[in-house]
Image (cartoon, rainbow, N blue to C red):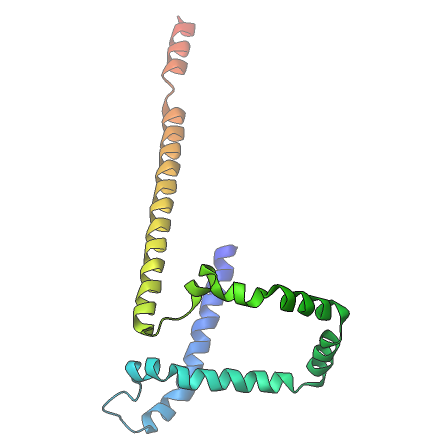
Length: 170
């Protein structure tokens, strides 16, 4: 039953892809050919800061202009809990202590930050994780195969039952 349902889902997916291709191929044929790709990875990483930060700032500007957010912010600003917390922070100079901790310094971006090297480090860590997972799953598979082999061996091992039958007949 499960196989039948999955087969119908596969057919529906293939039919859907066929319909999409049937509709889009004429549009793709009409497009002009380009010799070089307009996308440049080096430009993408170098311009990421100049494109991402204004977009994020624009998002927060739009969100902060919502009336619900304005009411929420004003109620938080007027709360006695926040006023007492700010009074304690000013007295203890907690902000400067936090800035001086090594935990905060560890997360500060260095001046010679390279997104490509950062991406390489992330991908290498992901690769190590995947290799560890692969090793673990292969060990699990090996133990499962050994258990199955033991079970089949015990099922086929009827030597003692045959001896009992032979001795009873005599």
